Structure formats: C-alpha cells, structure tokens
Picture (tube, rainbow, N blue to C red):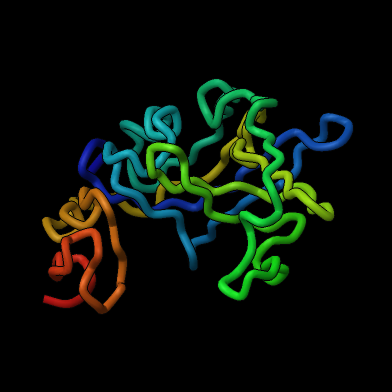
Amino acid sequence: MVVENLKVVSATYSLYINGEGGKEELMEQATEATPLTWCQGEGMMLPAFEAEMAGKQEGDTFDFVLKAADAYGEYIQEGLMDLPKKMFFNGDGEFDEERVYVGAIVPMNTVDGQIVKAQVCEVTDDQVTIDLNHPYAGEDLHFTGKILSIRDVTEGELKAIRNPHRCGKCHSKCNECNGEHCGYCGEA
C-alpha cells in the first residue's frame, strides 16, 4: 500500500527549524509510541507535506525541507495587534490573568466568525499585544521520519474528518446542530 488520498498514515517525525547561528533546532517530534497520524488528501496536513508523502510506502524514510512559502507562509508584521485589555476580562469584570499571559495561546474570533489562535506577546496596564502569525511563520521546516503504517480510512473516520464543525465529544446537544445531536458528539 502507498500513501495516497483516503489512506490513514502513521509516521514518526522530527521537525527542525533554523536556530541561533544557523544550527537546526528540534521543535516537534512524534515517536513510534506516539506517531503522527493523518488521512491523506483531507486537509489535515500542509499540502506541501502531503505532496512529499505521496507515493511513499510503509517502512520508507523521509528527509525534506518545506520552504516557508510552502509551509506557514512568511511572517506578516500586520499579524501583531494591540488590543484593549478589557477584551480579556473574565465574567467577573477582571483581567483573566490565568488565561492571558505572555506566551499563552488564546482563541480569537475573526470578523467573519472564525476562531483563530493567537499568541500573547505582551501585557501592559491597558493593552494586550497578540500575534496572529503561526509560530512557524517565516520558517523553513525540515522534516525527517519514517512511515510506520498505511491503511484505508473507515467510513466513520471519514465522516468525522469531513464534519464541518467538529464539535468533538461535547456529550450534550450541539449548538451548531440547532440543538440536535449531530452524531459526532459521541451520542446518538
């Protein structure tokens, strides 16, 4: 079996980026005990990563670099935003120090209602500076690893992957399903 669309692939990998003095720095790693698993062709991975994996077989190793433009794009200065600190108040009208601190990842709503993750860069007396760039924006990504297994995706897995809102295991009526169980919540 080869890596192609609608195949579930498990692999080990190490991800490196250039660090201080041009020396590569290990940023992420998946082992045989905790492999990276994805369904090829379903948008779970970067398109350029999937292109590198296409055609590989179980047991094949890989070693490639994705340029920033093919990974998370270039770093965009406009992704840094200063927001009023009051936007981060909790239900008691106080600044949420437990959730919002330098280095924290916080969910933010875009103008069209999408949820994006932002990293908190600075907190001052009256504002919070966030960065909407992906942490690897502007970085070339060096991947090494090995394909552990390849199998057909099941119908249930594919249904869950293609569910547009992926409400997860809410175990209650899903708001995005108009108050009805959607079948993806773990309940019928």
